[in-house]
Image 1 (cartoon, rainbow, N blue to C red):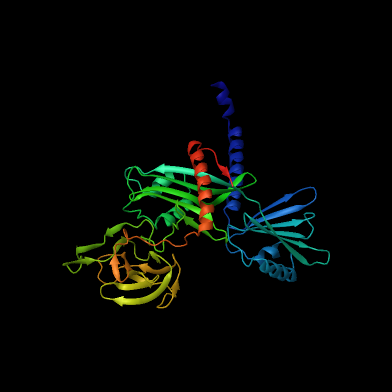
Image 2: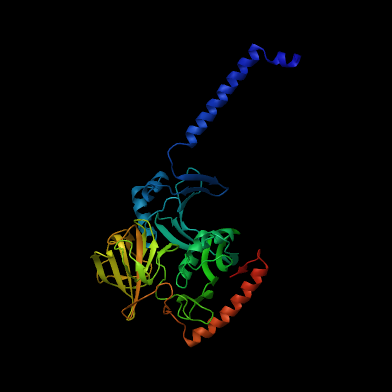
Length: 420
């Protein structure tokens, strides 16, 4: 107690209070500096023979503004912008693109600029003795690895939740959705106990993972049987997905245009209409979708009808080939540029979900018409496209067997990968 009392005299307390006040002031100044308006992230690193400043492009940054801050003249800025444009760099993307400025010394003018628009590409500009800027594009070498993940659907699961639990990245899951949507409906075909697996690419640079690549193979125990798809490059350089036998796995139409949408009313010859009150055929499938949800075309084709009627409300009808047409009804509005005669690609947005016409709430009513007759979108056999010829099929089957061997190995060694 004696030592405690000796420390708690007035003089020492005053000194402590002053010290705390100074410390708090310094902390406050630090917070003000670090929480000021967002600016480009800039770091300067000096070495024995050069000085490099790295700038991460921030929102609102322009090429001319960033170059000007590094001491470059108006004429130099125009010349650099022209050179970059010729080499495919016409704009900057906030929080994605980086620019490196190099000088011989901290006070010397910039003599080299490196624009990094992606982890796999760098555009280098160097200033020659005459003051002209020369450009050189460098493609960064990738270390691509094939990674295998597998999982099982548990009671109450969605495929997305099960995929997340299996460690599959969200972007890869989205790609798998797009592939499997040609063969199955994720609302009605997913059951507890179903197994699935995905083989996909991971891209590395200097030992660090940069991003994910393509889905190489996918397998899903669907209700109609095991669905398998393999990515394969044909002799002409085109790439597609094929089943185990080499038939095109990507069908001409998707069964469910909107991924992971819940079916609220199925195809049937007898249904009590929720608005009219009497029983009649329901010639399509209804998918729950909030007003404004984008509606993609289920397949490539040409718009043959676009308009309004009392039953369908705002609707679009697309002809895909001589046999198949699709119809999308109750739209809140049409997508810009989608008119009668417009050629659309698969996945192109043609309109937005709504509740126009005879409807009790926002949803998409989707129909498939085959040879002039309405068929069930969830069960109709859809034609495959992009089938392999005899020569390519032989190469595919050899490749598929090798890929299956790799998958079997990775299934037994979960921490391993295949270098591609």
